[in-house]
Length: 83
Image 1: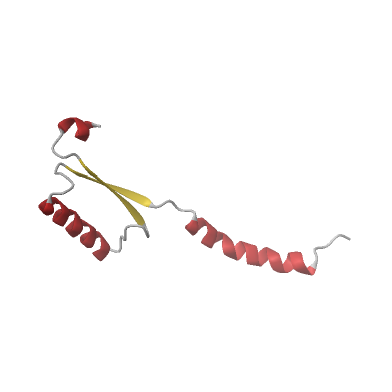
Image 2: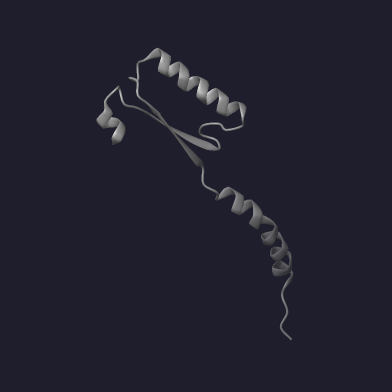
């Protein structure tokens, strides 16, 4: 009669209990694209972006923790916006 040993018996339920944690850890980080038509040195545009990130943080979305915010500026150049 072939049976399982004590280590295999204990490791089975332990590994099964860890599967949900591993699946949660492998979920991708969500990305948000923020495209601004202003120059990167524009104070009003930077204030708008700061307000945007604060509003997201108020909803629980923290850049670098559970969301990645990609911020791009075009400097008023329509060709950069299309790209």
